[in-house]
Image (tube, rainbow over all chains, first blue to last red; front, side, top):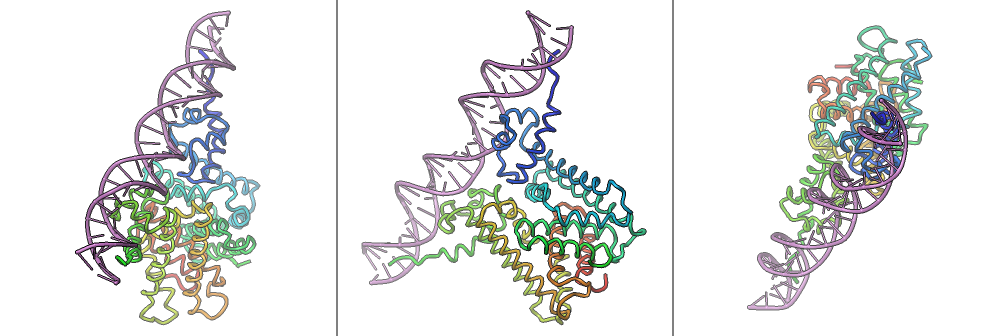
Length: 197
Length: 197
DNA sequence: AAGAATAGTAAGTGAATACTTACTCTATAT
DNA sequence: ATATAGAGTAAGTATTCACTTACTATTCTT
């Protein structure tokens, strides 16, 4: 009949901006007015793309995980020896942490888990994140335990925790960058096994 | 002249309740009306004890650290062999994690660090927390590095991270309690050194 | 070109909320 | 006893904010 809908394209176009705002301000402090301003559209246009503010946030949670997983795939794309996969990611993470607001979104989401939809989204994200880490640290080492003596799943949780503090340290400037990177790399090595460089 | 002020006593009496509400709802979702309701007083009475909502939250951040540090001192009060101090705390933490809303307050505070006062409070809290962990894992092992090969300060950050994920796992029920406890204990052992039990 | 659905504009609305004000009651020092 | 400062009550206020509505302007199909 008439104009074909562009909502799909527009959602895709605006979502990164929405992500950015949520990661800067957190869920509650982000107002729909601010989202509209930053997206350079009116509020009701956002409401045509998503039913409400919560839906915008849920889309953010999904997207933020997707983009992080994508980054990792890029890093590993040129197929290094599987034993080096972990080291590559550790290298990358220790330097580029927090660049895409991943943890800021996670933190603000964690204070909203009384809401079932948000809880489900966060739980899903963590499970996939943990799985992703597991799959990356496993191949290099036979089956079962790592060199450190830890089962893969446990070491993976340790790494997730390490990434979390590391981001907190970064945000709060608790350590100078170099020192933080060394800390990340050393503790990560300790968890997955191998010498400490 | 007249009645002696009881503000001191009343602050002390109400602060634990205020802490509880902030840890349940986070900073933004906590309304002064709800705080008053839970404290069973009127709003303006809270405003006589603290100048504004932020001050109530800052008091919460301080108190939540104090009470955690106090707990640890209690645990170590009956002077076990210094080598066992770490194991005791690990034991305690793996079981009693999250009981006092510590991490919920931390998470909600982390999304408010654009505010300088809150930032300073959180930075202070983390520094003291890290110091506390350091002082607890150091004595058992000579000077410098731990059995794991990690410097004490690094291992301490690792433990802080571990405690963080562990609380997230608890809140999101990502693992059944027993498994979470085993994970915590194993990864902690890996970080400070010593056999994995 | 006409018709129709979508994109965009601008103003508004009702509820929530941090904080206030004006007041009464109560305990204490003298 | 009583004057006085603090404790408690109750209503209010200005603002913010998620979400809506009524409208105009586009762009596509036929």
